[in-house]
Length: 264
Length: 336
Ligand SMILES: Nc1ncnc2c1ncn2[C@@H]1O[C@H](COP(=O)(O)OP(=O)(O)O)[C@@H](O)[C@H]1O
Ligand SMILES: [Mg+2]
Image 1 (tube, rainbow over the protein chains, first blue to last red):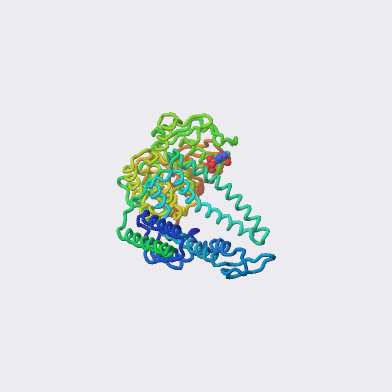
Image 2: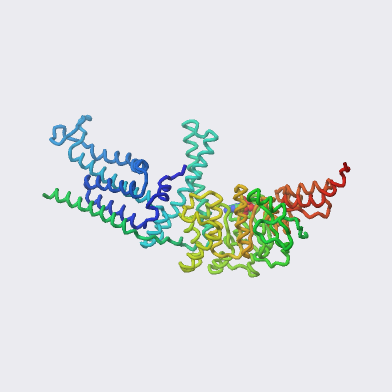
C-alpha cells in the first residue's frame, strides 16, 4: 500500500489542477473565521461547507474524508475532556454531574461543557479545513505557491526535503521491519522492543548517510546553497473564486449574527 | 576485428551499406527488448583524444581507506566506455573524482586536455560538461515532482527561466518521460526513477555522461530501456561512461572497456579483447562472459577456427557457427 494515502488523493481529485492559491485561500479563510467566531454554530456550518467542497467539488469519497477527519479525533476528545471535567461544587445550580473523589467532587458544569463543545467543534472544523487543502493539493503546488508569495527560502527548502524524505524513510523503515520480521524479530514482546530499537537506531544512521549522499548528488548538479526549481503556472477559476466568496461570506455573516445575538 | 556482415545491430541504428536485415536483428525485434551490440563502425579508441583522463590519481578517504592507487586511464571522446570491476574496487570513487566532487590526494584529472581547477566557477563549468548519474536514484531525486527535479540543474547554471523551461520540456520529450512529468518522484518505479535521474543530468547538456551502475538491480527489459536511452544520448555525439560488473552487458554494449581491481587499473582496450582474458577477469573478481566461454569451448572442440573473432553477443556466436561450423558438420556427416 502507498505509505501516505492523503498524497494519493492530492494527485487524483477534481481540484488537482485548480490554482493552489484558491485552495489555500479557502482553507485559510475558513479556519480564520472559525477561530475568530469561536462559535459551535459557525464551526458546524464550516464543517458542512468543507465537507460539501471536498466530496461534491473535489470528488473525494465521503468515507475517505471521514476517515482522515477521524484520525485526530482521539487527541481532540482527550484535550476537550480536561476542559469539560473540573472540580465542582455538588450543590451548585450549574452542576450537571458530580462524583466524589476523596474530599473533593469532580464533574461537569454547564460553562465547562459549553467551553468543551466550543473547542471541540472549532478544532474539528479547522482540522477539516486543513485536510481539505491536504487532500486536494499536492505538496509541489503548495511549495510553488509559497515561493511565489516569497516565503523565506529556507522554510520552503525544509518543507521540500522533509516531504521527500518522509517517503524515503517510510520505505527504508518498512523494508527493515519486513526483514526483521522475517527473522522472527517481532515474535514476542521483548524481541519486539529490541527489534524496534535497532530499527530506530539504524534509521537514524541511514538518514545521516542519505543526507550526505543527497548533498553529494545535488553538488554534482551544481547545487550552491539554494534549491531552485521551476514552478508551474496555474490559472485562476472564476467559478471557484465565486464559490469561495459565497462560503466565506456565509460564515462571516453567521459569525456576525452570533455576535449580534450575544449583544442583544 | 573485421566487420562481420552477419553481425547484428540494434533496430533503428543505421546499418552499414550493403548489410541486409539479419537473423540477429529479426530475433531482437521478436524477442522484445534485449541488449544488442551496435557497431556501425569499429571503434578506434587510440585515435580519439580523451575527453577525460586520470593521471596518476591516488585517492584516500579521510578514514585512511585508499580507494584509488596511482590510477592512470583515459576515457576516449565520443565512445561508449564501460568501467568494470567488483564491488568496492573504486568505480564510484573514480567517478566522484572525475566530476570534481572528490579531489585526488595526488595526481590530476584532465578534462579536454586541461587539468581541472577547483575554484567555484571552474567546478560549475566542469559539472555542466561532465554529467554524473548516481547509482541510487533516491539519493539524487529530491524534488516533489519529476518536472521540478529536472529543472534543478538548469537553474543552478544561471539560465533564465524561459531557457530553462524550454530545455526541460525538450529533455522530457527526448527521454519519453511525457506521461510521468507531473508525478511525484516517490510514486515512480525504480526504473522510472533511473530514467528521471538521467534526464536531470542530460538537461544540463553535458558532453560526457558518467553513469554509476545504471543497470544494477534492473530487470532485463528496464535494463534495455536504460541502455537504449544512453545509446540515444551517444548518437547525439556524447561520450558515455558507465560502471558495471555485468560483463555480458559491457561486452555487448561498450566500445571501450576498462577493468579496475582494488583501485588499480588492470586493463583497458576493446571489450572483445579485454573481456576474453579470463586470467585478468578473475584477478578483477569477475567471471568471463558466457558467450566468450562458449566460444572458447567451441574453438577447443575444433568447431570454430582460431581466426574467428570473439563474439560479443549470442547472435554473433550464432553467425560464427553458421559460417564456420555448419559447412564442416555438413561435410562430416556421411551422405545418405
Ligand atoms: N565515504 C567513504 N569513506 C571511507 N571509505 C570509503 C567511502 N566510500 C567508499 N569507501 C571505500 O573505498 C573503496 C572503493 O569504494 P567504491 O568507490 O564505492 O567502490 P565501487 O563503486 O567500485 O563499489 C571501498 O573499499 C570502500 O569501502
Ligand atoms: Mg559504487
